[in-house]
Image (cartoon, rainbow, N blue to C red; front, side):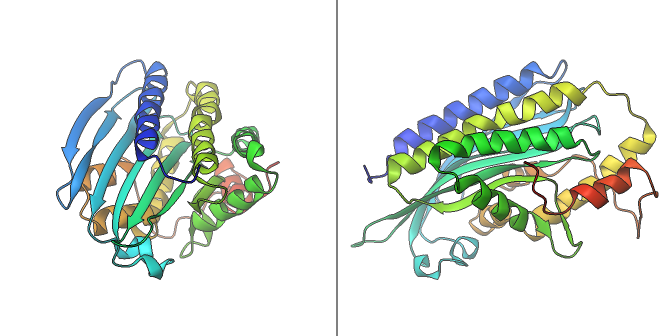
Length: 303
């Protein structure tokens, strides 16, 4: 079957949002998700944003569902596919970012999305995109290996070449050129997925979405009670500044949302609640912070 089933994708994504929020809530003893339903001001549709803030495990976690449509794809969506310029679009997706309180628990991001670009008199062009990536502050090789093993498991039913390809794409995408470092230890990143037809492509999207929790929750449970002090907290806040830099300078999803007139609060929920910048800071020689820079903030084969 090659005919896209938007209703099926939307139903899956709404359920995925529910499942992820429920699972994160089980790890958080204090804060609760607040839900905000919104309407897309620049076109048709809207979304359902859920944010949990001020928790003992999660300082801030945002899980956003959106389904929007417009008359013209924004430049961020047509930069690498100029033949789609001028087409109307529908976009449906779930995007999330989790910023834990404990510096030993990594920040995580996941996104799964579906686009249809339409033009009168022509067949619609559709594709899936998304992925997930991990941003540790303190380096634990076993966490990165577990994350990538789960990513590989998500890809295995679709061919042995899929994980290496999308792992490499993730390393290349989440790279801060002005810092000459990766945002974290990567994971998966994919876009323009439609080969093999709708059913196979949708199955791949579901596999990636369904493997986010098995990839992340064991790390949260292992690290969330690790004792830490002012040094670790300050380093976490400093490294969060890199997250802000990437999202505001490079991230295509952020640019798409802002260029298409999306809801600013939901788009920028990915930013951490607190971040610091220090002028020309360097890690102490021989410390765990230096190990992060030396061994983790570069493309690497973890498996």
